[in-house]
Length: 132
Image: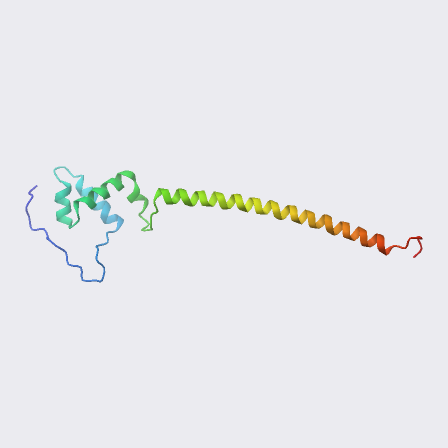
């Protein structure tokens, strides 16, 4: 394959955005081109108007399965952020369990206090001589 050709040198973006956005399917298609025999990353990068460094990053992500995991076009969070969120969830669940237990203990204490108060009031309202 020839290294020279009529490839576009620059792409002019007319919208307010400063960067070109590539869909996951476009990224996978471009990465697949780099795997064809006799084709280099630099050649595909020039042909598609992508930085070779960006293309190497897409290849690494594709090898790790990150590009296929994002076909839904949703945002991806770093593994460290996921771990931090999971730790925060565990801590909140622990605190919720602790507060639930405290609420149950207080409820039981209230029931005991209410029963004790009722017994006291009953004993005060009964005449001492047994007549009504």
